[in-house]
Length: 203
Image (cartoon, rainbow, N blue to C red; front, side, top):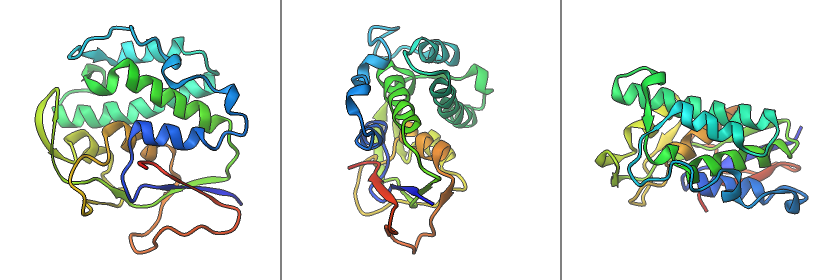
């Protein structure tokens, strides 16, 4: 049994996660450049509100297999549920800011595409390091972990760590929450049994 271990002891971000899983693909030439998965001029505006339907439309237009699109929609369902809880609305009423931008969608689709090309019997994760302090975003200055990230990580072992800053973003947390089959105990450390593979989700 071969397990992919997500090392989140330094956090998880969309770019870190996507680059890490892409590095494992045996034929990297088969992969598109990350930003080519979604047109970057699609509804691009710094503070534009992106509906879940806009996100789904961008995913549907991506040049990937339907199974990859299904996974990408699943990752966004995790984010939508957390954003809905943070704002006290339904998932259908959620409007994304940074997490719904073309760049974010492209990274998530790219990560899902790379994982679809890999063969692991299971995916496990370490506890997730969130970082601490405050972060500036479209909603203003928020504590770390941001509310959406905190909601995604409910029930998942997480810790603040010693490094100030946003080490785990909502998109990074959602990728881990969606794909991980199980989480290691906090005192298990990062161990690599023979035949298993470890990637760092925030290098």
